[in-house]
Image 1: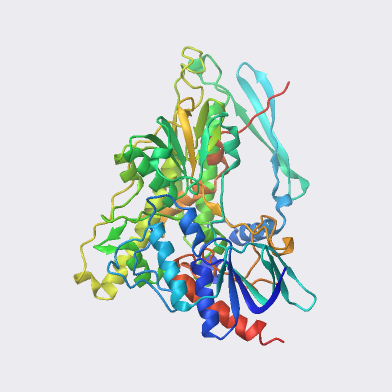
Image 2: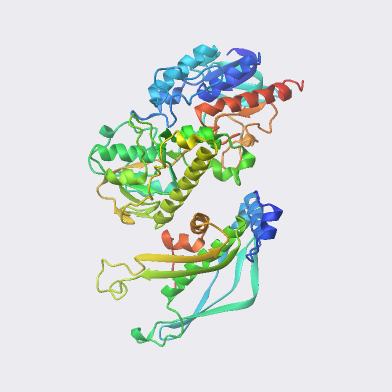
Length: 412
Length: 188
């Protein structure tokens, strides 16, 4: 096996790894980006057919690149996103080695890193972990309790409604993935029940503008860690209940209910015959409405303070969530499929245990690991609220590469 | 945490938020100490009348004894041919829910720097007696629906008050115990 030396190894060639590469190149730091598959691997292989980005096309600004196509207000499909990132890689001439799996990262006594791959060893003074926040779909333990023969699908395995045999489907979770999949299945004639816990309701557009345009302008997306009460809680916030579609429709629970989806509480328990849901639905709905209205109030204040109020549409905020609550028990004998839209967890099987906390999460301070020279990028609220967005990961990349240059490389 | 001296100094709801936040920080670092066991002892008096006492509980890695024992009597009302020596056990559940949510309202309001003047809660629980009387096996024994109506006078907007009430539900032990199933083992 060959051994090569480089200043920095970036693991993962998605948007975070590529943005990091652009920032390293800008600082003349020699590096390599190691990618287990192709560029934007998970966008190619781990997204369902109809999935589109939640953010509009213009909102994909990356260091040295970004969307320049004819439809800035549209939403890219996963395939288009993969192509977009491919073009970005070419534009920034990122030194990506595709088809290289990182197997282990260790530190040497001299404070260097050894990155063992299935194609040889790389030695480096710095490593940047950019493997994404969605390595593993999280499936809660209650899944074990369903009767044998139940088909369990995660958003990574789900492709389209034709995959699902006729009969009732239980979708657990009502964030972006769960709401979109429940909506799509109901529109294709499936009898769908969605179990709803904590979620973030937002209208697709407000006063004529995309909700993300507003969040971009108002400054919400750029809030830093000191702007929020409890960073860990914000980092656990579920994805926005949105869908990217040409008609710019909202996909809140009112819409799902109108499409025929049965709405019930968080999945609490299951056995061979029944699933039992929490009685907390009313509070989940109320909490989501309150938070949505708080943001829309902030937008209204911004619009009037900046003189925008006369140029844009009138207040068209959606009404309260009012859905008939489905029963708290669901007979499982005709439920063939359960879709677990219950979030994702990053996974780092190639990292030393001492880099992780008791729950397998990377220990870091805004992306800077306690191990000098090691960084992570591309996690939700890593350094700002929108750290997990394609559009903002470049800002984190710039800051982390500045740190890498001034701290790691200057310390020798 | 962004609790400033000013916020907590200017608000007095009788809740020591610093202590709660300190406990939260300490228990985040020492999760084993967060394991509590609550204990209640119940003695049958006569008929449907029972008396339950609580004194000790364990938590923070040790056993705790209160300076005084708390006692509550439960019974059934006269319409059930009983002596009404106390609230029904089902009403105790409603009392527990109201007490827990109201404690949450006070804690959350203080944490958010909101002065409370009065808080009242009215709890209603609907029950179909055909369940416990064994008339219809399709009818459950417990509450079908519970409604809580808070009336809160505070230095806050309606939206802020709604936010406090929502958050108190998210952090309430009894709300969780009533809304979600719990495994129970009863031995004799």
